[in-house]
Amino acid sequence: MGSLGALVKHPDDFYPLLKLKMASRHAERQIPSEPHWAFCFSMLHKVSRSFALVIQQLDTELKNAVCIFYLVLRALDTVEDDTSVATDIKVPILKEFYRHIYDRGTKNYKVLMDEFHHVSTAFLELEKGYQEAIEDITKRMGAGMAKFICKEVETVGDYDEYCHYVAGLVGLGLSKLFHTCGTEDLAPDTLSNSMGLFLQKTNIIRDYLEDINEIPKSRMFWPRQIWGKYVNKLEDLKYEENSVKAVQCLNDMVTNALIHVDDCLKYMSALRDPAIFRFCAIPQVMAIGTLALCYNNIEVFRGVVKMRRGLTAKVIDRTNTMADVYGAFYDFSCMLKAKVDKNDPCAQKTSSRLDSILKTCRDSGVLNERKSYIIPNQTNYTPLLAVLLFILLAITLANRGPNGPN
Image 1 (cartoon, helix red, strand yellow):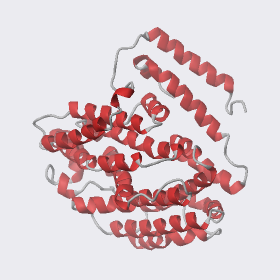
Image 2 (cartoon, one colour; image 1 turned 135 degrees about the horizontal axis):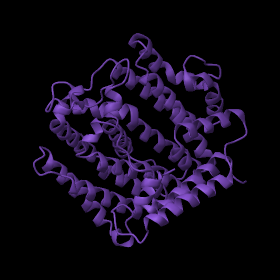
Image 3 (cartoon, rainbow, N blue to C red; image 1 turned 45 degrees about the vertical axis):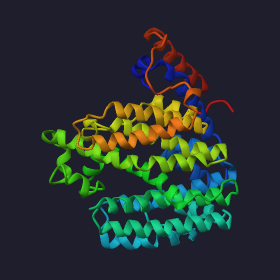
Image 4 (cartoon, rainbow, N blue to C red; image 1 turned 180 degrees about the vertical axis):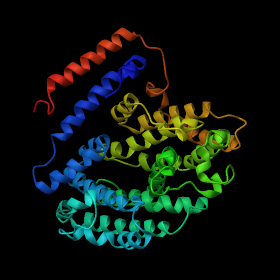
């Protein structure tokens, strides 16, 4: 829920936040009764409530397939992320992981893997087309992750390859699931790949400090080809004496991520099913919004930079059509462009990529049809009214109880 201070500054966040809270509670009550499916969807809600909410809006058959796909890859990611496991143990686990999705009895891994038999049971109930897509992507992703356990991300090419294995393949897999359910044409691999790369690169940029401070061993995904232009060691970016160079490096990384936007817009514009569209579009809008916040922002190296909950709620509430997506990308790109310092080493390249995005959005011909919720404007709300709204929200949620009415 949004904080009182945030609601005072942005009182028009109130209604979207309320809608999101109510929708989340409704989604939690839709968890199936069968033990294996109950485990899968409960786990999904624990990992990401907003993501679970969007998945729940999909058709039942596709919803189940996407849920299992997500949990299988989440378990695989858990293995990759565990820096306490020795390389000679981790690599074969990653390479052979795909075999375990058919095994109801596997108990080899921690956390999600402790109950992975539920995921396997649910997986075996999916149609063959879904199973084949999930198995194929899991196998390819595990092999790619294993490769980069033993390999540093040196060049931008390495960076793109790593992001392909851990996220681009997710885009390819989802496109196969959408096609299998019969509602969408099979998207070109290049576009599906870009959908994943744009999200992954945004996460890698945002999570610099968390990854570099990982114990017992740092996780380093920024390519040396970029950070090596600014510092001698990647961890040097977090030190205050390197603040200027750190921000310049950050801006270079953001500029690299922006190259995927045009592909993402093409991918989304071809989708036909409204629920699939929202499932794909909401994370992409969140990504461009996160990049707009991170760009030229030293706080990336000091703590956590993320969109306020109220704005996140607005994105979820108001991303329903391609016109909404063009509008959001246009507004966030304008925010980002306003932060470009002409003295930044990448300023010209950054501005050029932003101009391309802005032109694509303008050429859509739909920008005049919407009212921006992203660019700040004057509001008639007073701080007192914002406080009253916050109190009303608290009372409303309290009266609904922990589970809410049926």
